[in-house]
Length: 70
Image 1 (cartoon, rainbow, N blue to C red):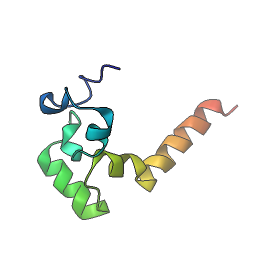
Image 2: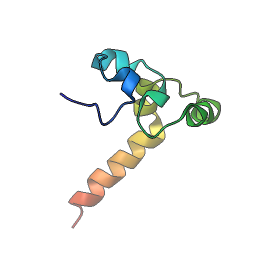
Image 3: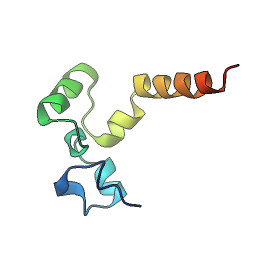
């Protein structure tokens, strides 16, 4: 799987596990300042924390169900 467009250059050669445990600024589009705001607001420190954030999970569920709604 090539996820080079999803992560910053420094993480392009890392394993998925390493990326999951990396700081959220490893994701393209999120700065270290954004990461600090996520940490302050939600105690999110890693990509894994971000993915498991209940608000992210709720939003994903709502969108998935909305796409199936008649």
